View 1: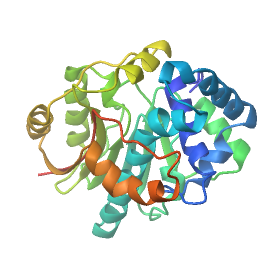
View 2: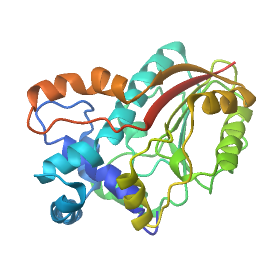
View 3: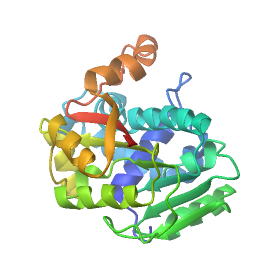
View 4: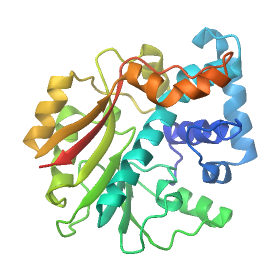
Amino acid sequence: MNKKSMTAMMCLFAMANHQKNCYKIVNDSLSERLITDDEYKQIYNSLEQGKDFFNTSTTEETINKFIAPTVIARNAFNRQSLAVAMRLGIERYMALGSGYDTTAYSCNLDSTVEIIEIDRSFDDKISRLDHAGINHSNVKYIESELPNLNYNGTKVKTYCSMLGVSYYLSENDLKNTISNIASISAEGSSLVFDYPTICYDDKMKHLAFSAGEPMRVGYFYSHIERLLSKCGYRIYELVNYNDIENRFFKAFNTLYKTTPLKAQQGVNLCLAVKK
């Protein structure tokens, strides 16, 4: 990323901020190494000044109610799903719109697994990885604008994550992206992604618009189910915002009662499997 994506930076900030807690839903120490102290302070101070907009009392309340929940939940869901897929055997791990995500460097993928990240640009991320001394020699970086993958690999058992991406694609581009993933994925391949429903929070839409990355559409479950089916996938697991709180946040919120994580209504997590 030559020009830093503000949404990608906010996701990195959310993960780094979460590491400061004694209890971590996602243990991601690499995120702290990718963000500079100045960047962290700048974002934190900006959120502190925005408490009136968010109608929150403290900066931590703002972070745990609006910034961190979806980032943490989808990362936890992705890593749990990936762990299962690894036990079942995958030949390729692919991350679309990978941003500053560290999954490829921290999840102990087998040396035989092909690792691919796809995003608009990687100059900034690679620079950060090198500066932090994080080995990434086994990762193939492909610069592309979705729905194009710019990758024509063989059809093998693939685990593909597409986190925080569907919000910014048109419906047609989302369908074409998934279709392109399917074209290089064998039967039994997995696709993990999050998507907005029609109830997605207007404040989050405003933030994305202000960052120059406007959100596109919201979906009904039946809509996503039909779209996936056309591309050869069947929904294996769906997690809505109530499920997110019970599955991922319950233990954390028991310990941090004054600054609990609040799942955002209008966000669903989905695991689909290629038929």
